[in-house]
Each structure stands twice: as structure tokens, then as C-alpha cells.
Image 1 (tube, rainbow, N blue to C red):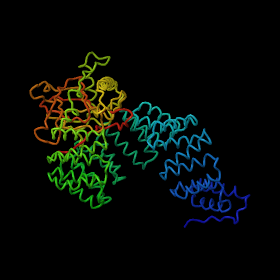
Image 2 (tube, rainbow, N blue to C red; image 1 turned 120 degrees about the horizontal axis):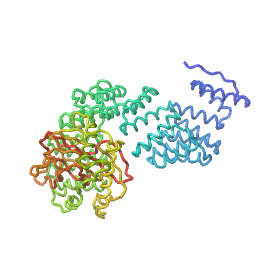
Image 3 (cartoon, one colour; image 1 turned 60 degrees about the vertical axis):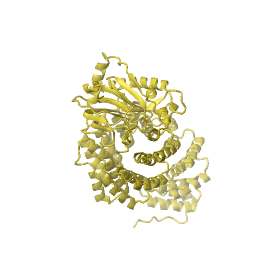
Image 4 (cartoon, helix red, strand yellow; image 1 turned 90 degrees about the horizontal axis):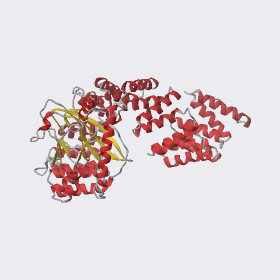
Length: 630
């Protein structure tokens, strides 16, 4: 039982300041319940005293009692409307309660009353970040920093935003400043680790993560970030151990299951692959999110019967969920049970009408079932809802071709939209071959995986992790610069066509939404696919086996026009492009493409990326491809 505080009754006005001071001392000592009693006693004497209302409101907010905290702070603002700190505090509570527009108004009112209020500037920046307005947030953080030069939290948020914008070097410099200003600030060390990892400075990143973990040993986020860095450094076994520690901390968190199983597959650790799901069931029982995720992995491995069983169990636990019904329909369709699948696709669409994947997979199932007219209707509606969706465009193209619609030739005009560029030799290198030989050595060191990724198009080879173009390695910087020049030329040469989905997005400014390297061994290839997070996609050839010179069999060549749906005689390659060291091939991201397997002991090494029009958001990191899992 908590000790009760004996209070003088009634409170004399002369004793009020001493009473408030006593409450503040109790609060500083961590005796919050006792402090609350004193504040409430003081309020009985002066129910509209703004400082008492403010203090009690903040105390309750700190305990998560936000509804009463809001009422108290509103009373405080009404009692002293010209006091900036009251508006600021009310804004923080409203923001936590999800009232973002009202919170923004509170912060702006606080700044109207006191323009040099650094905390209100910072809080407004945090709110603008939450509203998805990072440029405005950056301005507010910089303004807060100008008012309070050692404001470590503001420096950290600036670094985080710059990191998200791909400005990793600038972000690292800002976070270094933050650590000097606040050496014990967890967030500064955590974000610095993330930035250094993106820059490929893995040992430094791990040191930052270790410091962050020492400051907050129970941080799940730090555990995950450390494991991610170990993965990106190619230290697979240590990364898997790190992910497993994170799993033990939060067995129900889907993200850690995704990370463990993606890495276990590419690292060749089949002993660990999918084990996390059974571990979680033993710890927390069946979970619909994890049943769905395990079914997704099993679908990637074409184990559709087991996936279907898991999905039925998920549906029992969480009926009428769109993602579960959508994947259940796909599993049925992949087993050739189209009529059963057709009962579930509409339910998934009804549950999640803005999730294009359900409509796309419905359309692909109809195409495989030779229901071409119905498939065209599905893709046309999806295109109306999301005109730049690359998977919808890929499906629309297949439906046009299957129905003999002349719009196919306009949409998929390979002669106009597939372009090859022999990149200039960067300065400091004797010739194109010498530069690419050096680049191949650099990339080879980054191919640490033992097998292809479980969720990508590559077969019989390996793929780098992370965002390749974030590296500050001189060779990668040089090839990136040459590639950017070629993209700029490609964009300038796009036709002025406001109806074509690639040309209509023509803009001089672009960003990369992902970049990576692929290395194929003998009999390796890329399954036919498209890139769902791109606008312009690519293949740049760094090293090639001699087999590519076989003009008859076109070993290792890039091919366009054939889907992964096996739709019959019309579903065949329409264009082949012969690889050449130093050559870059650019094309719209919705064009179906793959490669021809090759018999050769040599390696086929390439760089690939997706470019998007600026200012579309960049999610930087993994290759963005889509599967219909035939």
C-alpha cells in the first residue's frame, strides 16, 4: 500500500508556493503518486492555477494518462493564454493522442508567442516528420539548432532525415556533432550506426551500435540494427545469431522473422530456414501475422499446399483479413484450382480495395486460366486506380497481347524504349576493360552470400545486400556518375507522350530507389520479372563469361517480352540484347525481362538499379521485384 501524504487543511494562500515546491521535489525524487496527491490538494485551493494544472498535466502524461492530461492542460491554456510553454505542452499531449492538426496549431501558437522557443521548434519539426513533411521538419530542426547550438536531439533528427534522403555523408557529420553535444544520447549513437552501415563502414557502425546498446541494453531496435549491419558486412553467422537474440526479445515481431529467413536462405543455412516460426508458436502460440508470413515464404518456395494449410489457420484466428484471403486465393490458383480462387480474390479486394496486389494476382490467375477478357477488365480498373503501378502495367500489357489489342505495341515498344549505352571510361583508368576489371574485384568482395535471395529473380548466383550506390568507394562512385549521365540522356530522348506511362513521367530530376550487384555462375539466370518500385530499370555489365559470344544460343543474354506465367505460344521473348562489358541497358520498369542460362565456368557480374522521378520517396536498399510465382 502506498504511503499517504498528510496535507494541511485548508491550504493557506501563503503556503501554496511551498506546497507546489514540495510536489516538485517529490516528482524529482520519483515519488509520482505522492506528488500527484500534493498537486491535487493544491488545485482544490486554486483550481485555475496554470502552473499547477501544467505540472499535474505533464505528470499524468508521463504515466500515459493522456485524456485527463489534455483536460488539465486545456484548463491551463485557458487560464494563461499568453504563456508559450502551456501551448507547447498541450501540443505534445495532442500529438501523442493522434490529434496532429491541433498539435501543430499549438506549437505554432507557442512560437507566435515566443519565437526563440527551441523546444517548440523541435516539437513542430517532429510533428512535421510524422505528417510526412521532412523538408519542413528539417527547417524547424535547423531553426531550433540556431537557437540552442548544443541541441543534440535536433542534430540527431537532422541526421536521420538526411540519411533518409540518401545524403549519408552529411548525415554522418551531423550525428558526429550530436554525439559530441550529447555523448550519452542513445538515438545519436543508434542513427550514426545506421548511417555508417549504409556507407559500408561496418566496423565503425558496429562500434556505434555497441555504444547505443550499452546505453539502452533492452533496445530491440539496437539489436536489429546490429544484426542488419553484420549481415551487410557479410558476417552471416553472427548476423543470424543477432537476429535470433532479437527474436527471443520479441517472438511475435514479423520483421525479425523476415530477416532471419531471408538471410538463412541466402547464407545456405537450411537448418535455420523457417525454424523461427515454430519457435514463436512454442513461445506465444499461433499468431495470424506469423502464419501469413510463413505461408508467404512457403509460396516463394512453391510449397503451395503447406502455405494453404497455414493460411486456413490464420483465417480461423483472424477472419476476413484481406492479405490472408489474397494469398489463399493465389495458393489455390497456383495449384490450378482457379474456380476456388475466384471466390476469394473478390473478398480480398473488398477487404483492402486499395491494395493493388490482390487485383494484380486476380488478373494473372485469369490470364493463366485463359479468361482474357475478364483479366483485361481487372487490370484496366487497377490501372485507373493506380496509373503508375508497374505490376499493373505489366499485367495490362499481357492482357493486351493475349487479346490481340493493338495497344500492346504502343505500350511495349521495345525499339523505342530499350536503349543501350557504352559508358565512358572514368578518369584514371587505361580503358573500359581495366576499369571494369577493377570494379569487378571490388564487387566480388561484396558477394558474400552462399546462395541466391529467396525473394528475388536470381537463380544460381548471389546478390549484394544494402544500397550499392550509397557506398563511397571510388570505383562505385565513378560508375554511378557515368550511369547518371546515361540516364539523363535516356530521359531527354524519351518521347513527349502524355499517354505512355514511362514517357509521361519524363523529368530531368531522378533518384535511385535501389541499387545492387548480381553474380551468376554456370547455368545461372534471372527468371522473368518486372520491377515494381521503379520507373527506369537497368543492367550494367561488369564481367562476362565467354559463352555470351554464342550468337546462336544467346547464352547469358538479356531478353524482353516473356512473362513468368507460361501463357502459351505468344508468351515468348520478343527482343534479345547481347551483354558487353561496360554496356548499360535501360528500359521501363514494367517491361518483362529475364536472362538466358549459360554453360560456362566464368561469372556473369552486373549492376542493376531502379530510377524514379524526383521527388518520389526513395526506400533505398533492396532490389524491388515482384513475383507471381509460377
